[in-house]
Image (cartoon, rainbow, N blue to C red; front, side, top):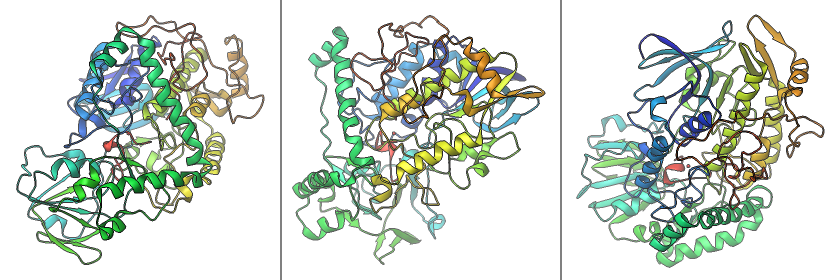
Length: 584
């Protein structure tokens, strides 16, 4: 990027969130945008996590965009290669390649309060943008604990999200640190190859069977020839998960039956009572991410696999010392210790209206209005922001809901006209955050007796959404201008006056969202009517706005009355890569 160019929208990241944003921008008729990607290819989490056994623990037909269904998923729970190929296909099908700037890591973003635009410095040059959509995701920067002696370890060390495929594990003594979603996939994948595998477990996870199988040729044929069968499958998968939400958010005691099933799953493979005791969690199921695997426990029962039920304390040469004093000599260390979720590094690179970084603004805890916009950072929004994660469903549903919000945000800017910006009012952000945290108090994530990566340094849950995906879809279907301050070059207009002007443009008010104050306008706006792209689903005039990913519903992203809102909303844990004690 030679020189200094200007774009309407700059999207950061090319994973599900970034590519989804790019598709939605084009369907809204916006083509003046770029997607800035620090790596040399698209894919985000599903590019970075290529470890042995990497797969999704959300069913494939639910873990895909509603506007880009894939009738040819190979398995009910597809692996990393298939998901990455799907994302490459989306980039090609929707004509996104010309907008994508690879090897363009964002080093800094600064808000220019005079010009009302973002100044963006990347590794490939500088540019400015009216609006920034940050889709870097919470599972993008690996977290490696500071272990005394690690720097002097003579063997090989790497994180699960930075797998070294050039290093041959065969015949090696290997230590796996962590027992999150990535670790339970890695352990059974590498156990048959290594000489000896030692798993360091700080906290035992709850593990349910993973009923994975190949999707038959007949099923794939039906999904290609009769799309309603594919939509019905997706709707059923979504509906089952929606019905489970109340147990997580309101009635954790109802999860006792699930605990019994998880214990039975363990008992089938772990016959040693002492080992079974070490593997039995001491907290309520659901408090930490529920993991899915039918191979994890059988792998731990192997004679060449050891479990150290204690965290790693220090390293002395090639010897790993656990907190309980156990010593293990190894040739290689693999960290499955998660990511910087509640302290995302991108926050250090965003400087807002008052010269403050987003990291400083969030030093007491992340919070964003409807999980998207932050006070003091005009015309900036995030995909998969604070309290938008899930505990039991597909993150793609949440992403699509936030894309709805992004699309209406841009429509509102267009209708306001001129050089204009929207800055969320601190009072609105605080009100939203108080409501979310109040609902969080009853959830299993706060009451289940565990310490999880959902919680920040202050012990607050700033990660998970305490409701259904349908609720989130309703809360993000449109922008409420009363929650924003309208900024113009050289002046600040009062929102009520602008809201009146906008009401003359918008033909009808959108129904009040669930949980909103009665009588509050959520005035959505008409879409641009942009023609669908090749390979894209056209807007369906029969589509409903009911929320949820029911059969036949598509979030095709078409604007206006014809746009459907199928996917429901919501980091449940997509993949092993979604919650490795941190890696969806």
